[in-house]
Length: 201
Image (tube, rainbow, N blue to C red; front, side, top):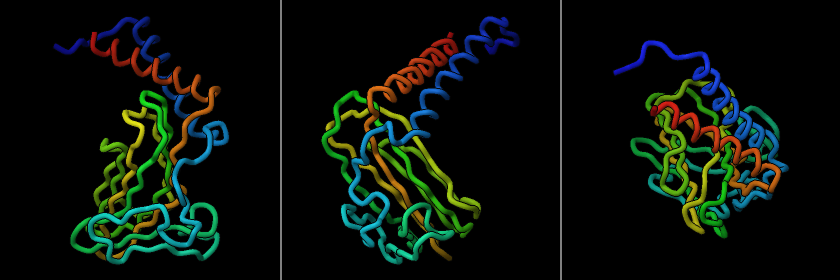
């Protein structure tokens, strides 16, 4: 049965847990310099091609462009574009030399064009990070996620479909936090655990 009222103390504890999560993950994501080197090969597609990546599914109308800074490039000079028609397709890359149980920070930038039908999804280690259907047109959206490695090698995968146009991806990274960032991330994970435990009570 759902409780209709909660004490001020429980409200305060939940607020503290929420702020801890925000502090741990937001600070870690906002300071990539503290999060160690990018473990992905060619995460920003600056090689001008898909070096380091493996194509998956329907790879028709997929490629890399290097027009220099502009609306379809999030950072650097290049970005990847995807326009599979009728079925999904995309790219994946196995990230090596991870430590089981260690925190991992994942980030990337995605540009939707408002096409219909269209879809975009991302996963790490087989676990879904984001899944969008017919996302509205707009500027680049930055995504950041904190998780823990469950194996020494985990696969980062992206899947796309855009029948009438193209979706863009840029600035993909997988990083292992440095000690200072790990402390902040640990605070966030602890806050998340505490919040879930109180919610279950």
